[in-house]
Image (cartoon, rainbow, N blue to C red; front, side, top):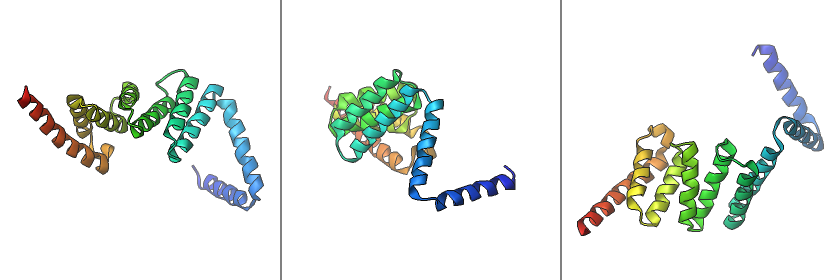
Length: 179
């Protein structure tokens, strides 16, 4: 972009910040309407439902959030879009919060069908597998996370999975010794 374009953009931002708050609200409404014209209606509805789920999650209303994420997924009618993957991932987090580990495993598996290296889904599913004593499956997911580049995994997930790997290896070895 040439310098003139940047200056025009900065000048536009400055003019916008000088407008009364109700004008900014009107501008945001107009931008929303413009997005409707270029965004399929079912996707817009699904987006609003996901946001409602996010709000309920933040308020620790996990069952309410599950209902909103489910409506979002149903409105999309498919499971491979980025919005569907996010809604499934968030619903899995809700299921984990209420100890519905089968729901966590199911939603994480659907996320991983679309994005097989999704770190959040692998970690959540590993934790859920461990909770239902399916240790070998938990160990597989943890190893998959640890095989990814450290920068993609992040320090917190790396430390969590490293600890899980050591613990799960001990449990699997103990179970082998008992048979």
